Amino acid sequence: MTGRLAELWRYPVKSLLGERLPAAEVDAAGVAGDRRLALRHRDTGRVASAKHPRLWRDLLTLRATGAAPDPVRVTLPDGREVSSVDADVDGVLSRVLGVPVTLIDRPPAEATLDRADPEAVLAGGFAADVPVHASPLGAAAPGTFFDFAPVHLVTTATLARLAAEMPGGTLDAARYRPNLVVEADVDAFAENDWVGRELRIGPALVLRVLAPTPRCAVPTLTHGSLPRQPDALRVPARLNRVAPLPQLGPQPCVGAYAQVVRGGRAEQGAVVEVG
Image (cartoon, rainbow, N blue to C red):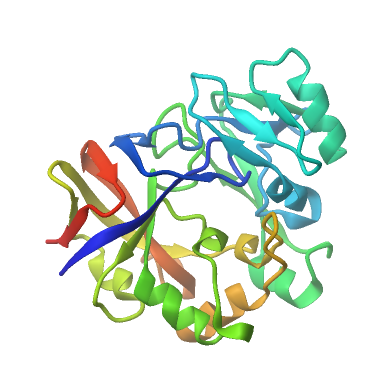
């Protein structure tokens, strides 16, 4: 299969809105500057994640741009900006979120985040008190805040199939927080069949697909100007419920996780080949 890289994204602060890029370097730690920072709850020590929407859905009202170790800018809901190097950045973000947080650039020992049962969130609503389990961080790439792998990709074919089932027939890729959106003449959910295969992007970058991406409650939440969309989870639960790993049961999946075999530059429009 041959296609092209239609979109390239990074999310400088975990669970905050990110930015679309024309090009970026990609290495074993993913897209340069991606998920290099996170917020830590000062009382519990947990890493903040909108995967627990009852506590952290407001993270998706903030947008981060830039690449650590350079200053990262966070745009607040009222349009003000705060920099990751400002003396009062923790105080500003704590006041906006209503929770005491600290901006950190390295996962603490045995770092974890809370992941609410996504289908319980669908049934009870984003403010419901639903089952939550602790999910470890930091194994994918030391010093980063990835859940499982440093690169997440999705095809335009998968997005189009999901959009066809949505009210209004539209779906923004940003709901699923991919790094790479690949445009190709493939069937929806082709990513499931790419597990174990390599993707070559441009002249140098090579990825290996690891697993389909199981979806949490995040795609259903308000993302900046995008309203809540429960069907962003309900539709994949109906159309693509697969086991992402042998030890896991079937789950709603959209896109795939990948690791970097050989680093290189990713540019919008670059040729993508599946080996």
